[in-house]
Length: 94
Image 1 (cartoon, rainbow, N blue to C red):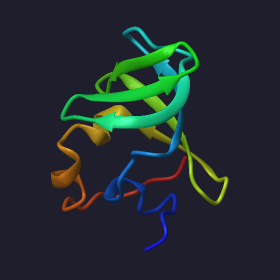
Image 2 (image 1 turned 135 degrees about the vertical axis):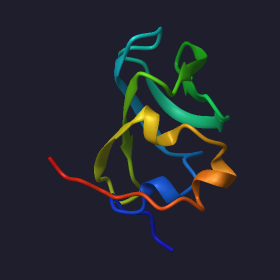
Image 3 (image 1 turned 45 degrees about the horizontal axis):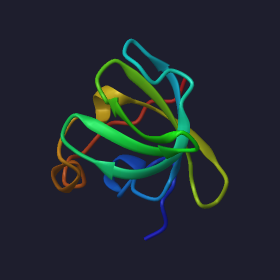
Image 4 (image 1 turned 90 degrees about the vertical axis):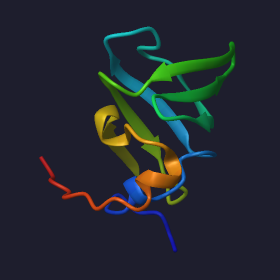
């Protein structure tokens, strides 16, 4: 199944390019490739090393394989990756 803006929350994020657009914690402006994901954090491999970014209170911009950029509130990602793929989310576009 191809990853799209409509189903990104039900897909694996590891391997996607990501940019931290906004964060109340460290990591604002950080960009790199997602190398790990836990219940509360996303780990990005940047040119300066690996950075763990808390999902809560962060806004991520992921670049899909089709080169489409999608912004996702970190609060929507708060769960274990294997559990998040089973959840149903209502998508709203601004």
